[in-house]
Length: 135
Image (cartoon, rainbow, N blue to C red; front, side, top):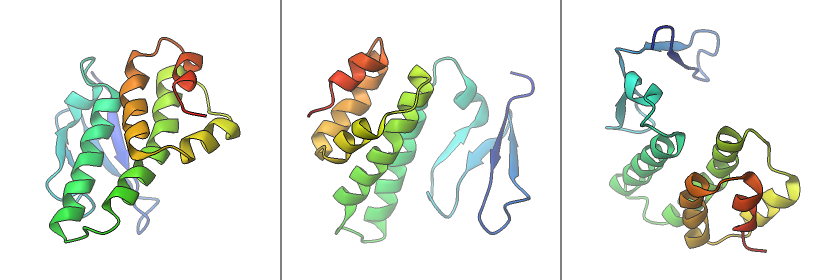
């Protein structure tokens, strides 16, 4: 795992990213209080992008609940999934989603988005995954 690093860019200092090496633990305070992950785990063959992204989404939702943001949690969760799924598809299948497919994602319910998040790992091809998106 030599040479594998994670760079975290922050708006307040975009030219000075935080650099995390394989032996480090990454934290993204104050955005996701309490969430942390060993950098080595992120690069592990057993850790999928979907699993790490799911952890981040879960931590974000939990943080919202802790701060008393009961209203809008479902909307926030859906917005997170809608922005996350195209990225996961790009990593998994190496292709960008067409605007028509993005529009179909935007029309999905929370249950449908959660199903699509799970389905992205088991679909053999991008076309197979896209076929699972409701019309």
